[in-house]
Image 1 (spheres, rainbow, N blue to C red):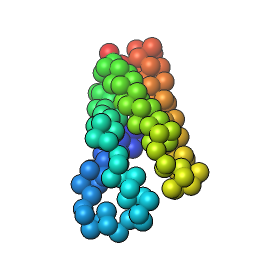
Image 2: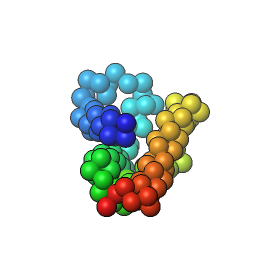
Image 3: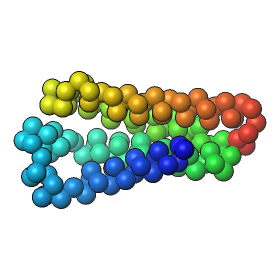
Image 4: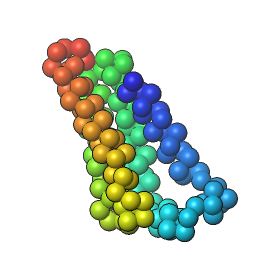
Length: 127
């Protein structure tokens, strides 16, 4: 399930960075402005989060203990990206308070994957 979740994240990331001018111009002005003012470093951190989560999931399936460390890096990227988006942009103002649900879900799943991989490591499942 973790691999599928993170592959969906890669799809969302890919759609975000490859958004066409046509799709961008179809957005409401406030949303378009949020998208256009999103700094490049935020997209880089987004990529680290989703590709790190995917790599961690693959390592978990391979029973490799490095999965835990990769999930930690992915989680830190999640916290940085979501924190910036929610605290330093007008995302909540533009999209309403329900915009917090997805970042909270992503953060909780990232934390769970760290916990789970750590438990697997402690139990000797990951080597």
